[in-house]
Length: 171
Image (cartoon, rainbow, N blue to C red; front, side, top):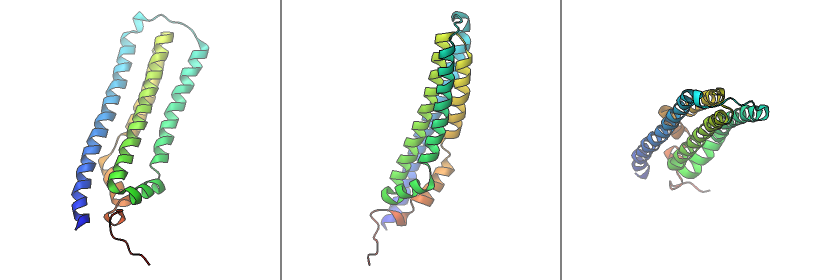
């Protein structure tokens, strides 16, 4: 009886968390595009300054943050980790993990875009914003929460028989 009451509760929780996460990722995606537009429009107001050390620092930072965001998502969404979370915390804990990780990866993409934009402000070269924007958009699209994937993860890793308050047999 308890498990049938938890299924609609977890379905509502899934819908609520997925919607909030998708809106956050979309807002960051729009923010990245706006940074690229601002960089394009401000080209005539910025003076070109050559700074090779800043050039390498911005490029390496964009690369490291972009790759680390992908590594973070793959590590946090590994099957063994999600199975442990689902069995210990149930569907609500699993959904919280999915939401938290997706938002963290999306924020790292936002940091990539900001690094590129700050490189543009310091050097006057819009390329940094465009490069950071491309990497950030790629990461945001990679991190976008697909509802069917979340539903499949809840079904697979947090089934009602794995809930902590369900009766278990002891030997």
